[in-house]
Length: 217
Image (tube, rainbow, N blue to C red):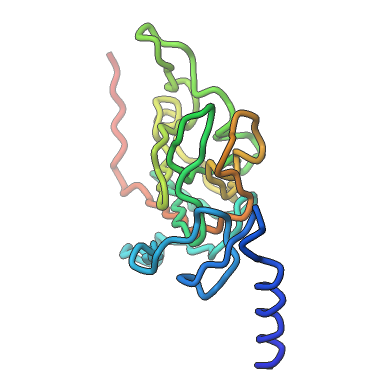
């Protein structure tokens, strides 16, 4: 078994040399092959932290590559759902339209139990607002950007999802970061990679009895 493991490591390192544009050997990660820019000094490693919440609220799904669709369960009377992605192996930045931005982690898509789309990161954020920005209040979920390394995406986070609530059942979402999106969209000149790995958990909180207040004007 040790001989086989050594052989696999040798072959992996042989296939991942300093001449490879898509991979580099990372001593801080046990000489694993990682996307360029993902290897940081051991003192800068990003540890995976377990949730301190009760186990009944946390679904630890494991470590997955970007592009992987994962199911999770929302119990009855859920008040909120939070998708947590913690970077295991991921680049730090991407270059998009000549601007260097953080490689933020964000679900590519989130799907309702009935198959409808709750969130799509490649869809326009919302309707134009008078101040020149965008108004996402009419969408079920919204993302503001700027969540590198570790990201928590919580629903509800718009007026529409506050009104609709969080339906019970089996939801799905796709593990994703900006580096992965750079391989899918035009405009990226550096940092694109479909090899990022994230530790994924889903946190659900149920509403206590009597927590809903109806107000009429």
